[in-house]
Image (cartoon, rainbow, N blue to C red; front, side, top):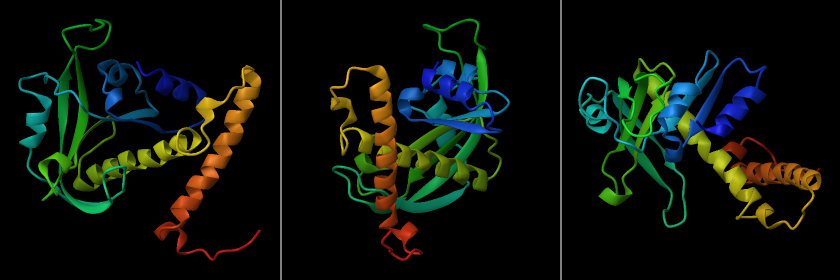
Length: 218
């Protein structure tokens, strides 16, 4: 089970609704089986073409689902990939995942019913660069609008990644700290988080998000 998600769930006791969002490394059957509860949802990008409870495999099942609509947005730049506007076909369906045969904990359910959203880029620059996201979630997905909301939630994960990247390799380099005292290191991490948050806010402010504000000296 994802220990970080479990720790977050235990810490956010006053939160009425929380969604744990994970990239492909979080595609673990035990996460889907154990983490969700009445106020905790999961949203994980699938990497494993899992067996379904009835027959067939996950990826082919969603690929054969009729297109529900299309969505377009600006795909942010990353090293080796310039920013571009992408148009994607949206598909969604309820799926029943079968528990893996190897390494499974038999205390977990033999099948899990989740909702899957797939977005697949229309006319990508090349097959290798095509955007294909397959998102498994416990959130209700009954309409194309629901599916697009799930995609937007997943995309919000990028801001969190940018925040921690700023704390680490791209700016503050917190991991290179030579502080050995645990309490002092925790205080340094808290201060670094505040600084990294301000830096990310300034970066976001350069774009459309900041156009509504007038620059001021404080």
